[in-house]
Length: 316
Ligand code: SF4
Image (cartoon, rainbow, N blue to C red; front, side):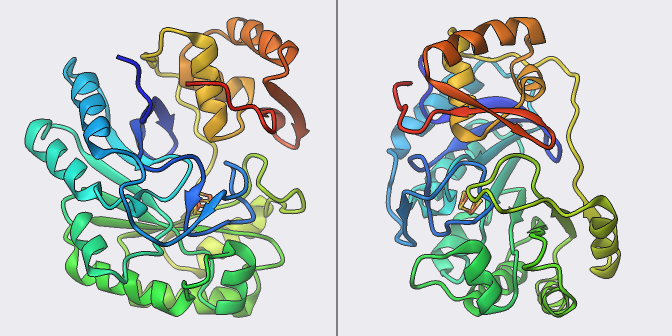
């Protein structure tokens, strides 16, 4: 079976080996974050609907999980906001009923929890990782560039309501953008919001791969440690180095590389981890894809990042 809505399994720094489930078309999101590694949002919306057919997602999951692969999580994530899909609850219910051995995780921008239906849809998920990069409206607008209807205060209220009703673990993620949300005033607002939301854990991260806007820089390690200390109980997320073998389910390595790069720019080393192939072998495919002008290479601080060439969309 060819999978259109599943990706990976990906060794992630937080979740171990995680099978990704993408519930919306590429870059359908309620935010257009300046640091987004998937590029600019193309469908900016907070309207929930069945963006991809839930029946098709369930059929792919059933097929893939039938072989009982060893996974740490099945994770709703991808290149947009998963809670925008109005059928999320049906996918969760299916997994809990037919594949109960797998833990479920949701990576979300946390913008839609003010809605009771969304809180109900995620209630059976084992781990929710929402992001919150600002607790003041002005900085929220600058970093996250939301669709019109969304207000920072409402999002925080939604997260507080989620905490009240949800029995699983919440790990709140904060992306630090130097010059925007790392000032004493902004951090104090964020700290106040964390206190009210009361997540199990807080993780902070900064730019690791090219973002949507070129001018976004990474915070330095010293500053990140200082912020983690100030926010109490927060930890800095470092680079993930797995080393564990990962079996990919796509028959075409080229296509798998393109699918991976479509979701986020990667170095050769990232691709080596994800696809469990030797660097020299990956390089062979990369040379071919560069020559075919399907991808571009870009020098960044952490190395050479490969990304889908603007306008190229010819992969399954
Ligand atoms: S980082 Fe996440 S929330 Fe922000 S635009 Fe990208 S997909 Fe949407």
